[in-house]
Length: 284
Ligand code: F3S
Image 1 (tube, rainbow, N blue to C red):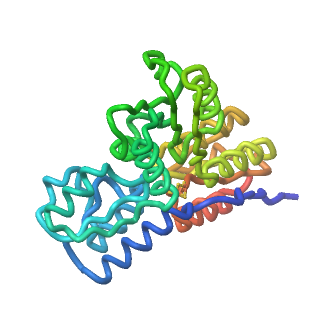
Image 2 (image 1 turned 180 degrees about the horizontal axis):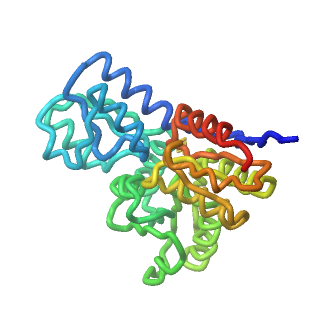
């Protein structure tokens, strides 16, 4: 008797709150303005969604110099304060879709700077969100993903710590520990968004209960890549796909249970297509 292959979908899949909000703002803007709508860099790290938005008239530009007029949508992970000001000076209409959790972290960097703290932004220096956070501080600011990045820092009266919203909690903890030896006053704001940590915990758990794990999301999405790493550490038979077309029947040989998870920038329709295709492939 042939048995069905069971497909288990992680509880948190699809867009996170901030991405959902940004996409909604973008679609609303497209309906209202019709044309000359831009984002600085892709609105989210998912090529299929970016492609659909292009069909609605929202285009990605890499620099403000490439935008002469119209409307600019600020992405969920924010931009540098200089870019915000420059967009206003250029006379562009600004639709600010910065996630409120990112905005809060930006405000905290400003506040700590104004209160005379040496600010440490715990996060990845090259990430656009971190570049944005840094721009709200002064020269007395450090970016650290690990304590090594703070080796040159001298003792100072007070340190204020703010985290990139998608940072792993363990990384923040090691940075806070290191800072304890550098100042007698430390103020820590835990600005890590739990949408990321919950998803990571769920996918590790799911990977432990299935034969094959499929992670769905953009190859340029760091949170999707992180989920793939986490699942691979638990289960060798982990595969990352951007779309259903990339699924291969041989992955599901002798497989009775498949787990599916997705990054925070993967839309529901792509996840649905992947699940439908896996169901069609069935157990081999
Ligand atoms: Fe915002 Fe958290 Fe998503 S910071 S953009 S809700 S991952």
